[in-house]
Length: 179
Image (cartoon, rainbow, N blue to C red; front, side, top):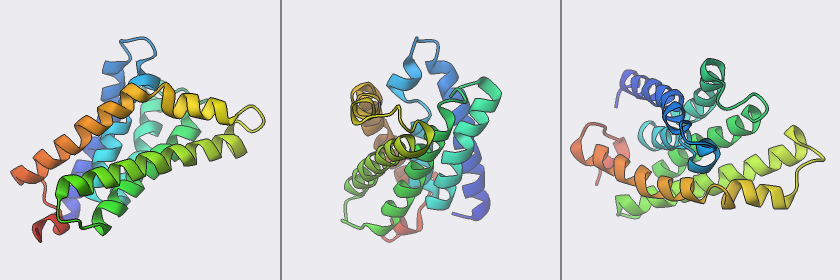
């Protein structure tokens, strides 16, 4: 893929970071339960690579917060860190692993990024953003228990859509061309 196409796709994913939460927030507390902003960031990292995924993970929540107030400014710093890690790790790992099975590569990249992002989110909240008022229990509840529906949605939809895009040829990854 050319840099121009990657930039255009990254811009599309950033726009999705603004639009998807608007649709999901018609349901009370849907943002923190269904995690709609995570989906485009994860897809951007997988499709465009780690630099674009990282940028999408930073600018998606930042622009969404500025334009729509979602996420609120109190939550924004932790979410920026989490989503930046998502975009970075998915792109990095997906380019490095080659099991010979694309769907397995997608799932390994996705699960590693989801775990790394949640751990980094917890560390940043504990040490910087919510120091003194953040605990392991709060982190487990918010990062895993409350977000189980969103995690399941990500595990179902992200590999499905990325695999479809790669199979149709609408997006082509250099690594995928070798297979």
